[in-house]
Image 1 (cartoon, rainbow, N blue to C red):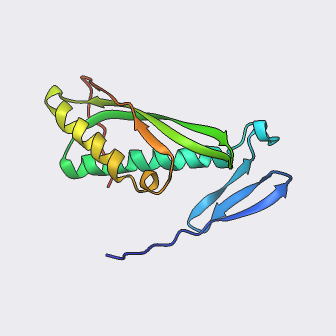
Image 2 (cartoon, rainbow, N blue to C red; image 1 turned 90 degrees about the vertical axis):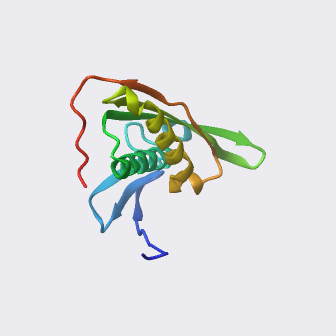
Length: 153
């Protein structure tokens, strides 16, 4: 297995505080802007949104991959993510990211194993391990009588 990978994206300015980000690996470019509170355009993705999104998408993909390897079936996983941006003497920075996973299991007997996988996903998500902001996970696990979600491999 390789021990190093590269991810190349390009951003270009389209007007003041706004632009487009793209990658050869992804067919659809994404418009972005500074957030409105920093004189940016409302209604488009911001660097702050991307930052929080990178943590939550990493958590979801890490958890679902671990669940697949562990043969843990679940009905659904939804994760709300909240990034806390604060200003101190050195400027603005994210101080914490709160993840609120809501996991619905197919069977009560899987509750303890699911909690262990949630904790492991929190510890091993590579994006969360790469940032200085504190990660807080507030998980809610329930059991639903539904058909398990198939994981595409």
